[in-house]
Image 1 (cartoon, one colour):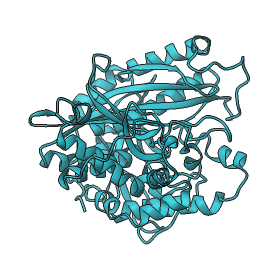
Image 2 (cartoon, helix red, strand yellow):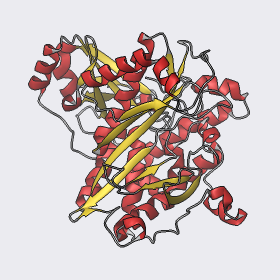
Image 3 (tube, rainbow, N blue to C red):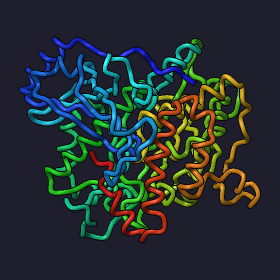
Length: 452
């Protein structure tokens, strides 16, 4: 197992306090993401910043095992006994909205050491393992969301035009407000546009170190939700907000470098891949079936993860192939950030820290085992033979994805038994509660769960 990091990422409390004072902050909100992918929070008056950093605020271990329906998926580790502390990272603290600041939090033991089941600590541990191997990673994300009425019902408006100018301009006041919010929070915003589905939009966050990207993913969801509320809207990041409608992804881009430069460009392999870059892609593909339930494991995720949805339903790779789970984005003048791979499978029901840890750890596993790069799939995978499609297809339902996670030695090594067993418990509750239920009922239960 990759050992949980003992390093707590912090910053200067006095300098953070001064920044917040200058912005007239009165309330400090610390958030953590549970195994169901839901953002949970505690808040204190800003004067208690130091306490939130050093002592932390109490949180039952069951916080991590809450379900979307607020059930608790009890396990041997998550029950009614015990306590953890939520300790915020002052270096990542920023203003959320007028008078309110936000910071990401770690789950820690009472003595301040990271809890072995803390998602943020698991990601740090994988990043540390990459560093020990002489590698550095950068990740970026694309978040899709659907605007709704405040109660989650569908909005009624003109006929939708995917990627159209009118849908974008119709909500320009909301989007300019959102742009201002991102700017005020120190959040870079690459682009935003109307998406394919009705009332669906997408924002892109630029590459950064993996922990920063995961933190920004949480903050972006909060900022989008707050901007939508100010303009009389709700927002859904659910993998499938409305039964039969378009799905939302939370695609994760990643790139790797070693001491000599990028692994995904400048090499002699296909499309400029270096041998280690090819092995990283091979590791991602090899590990995908076992970590699918971490990346897209909710009761509605499998509805999105189907051929034709550009969600990556097949464990394969291809240059700019949007139906492959791993889309290679080559280093070209049209790609200022350099080469990366986009993992299409990820959706917003995933804990962003665990998703990044699982993927980066899988890439590292491929490099360490020197896995051979599989043949590229340069076409829509549905055009392959039935035998080949069957060999590449990811799990088509939640039960199969959970079974694969349960038996994945790689997932347990990267994330630890506490995380894997906790995730399984939460998702198995969903399976029991929603299997066979009316699709509209299931969609409604998850519609606003991941909106902050």
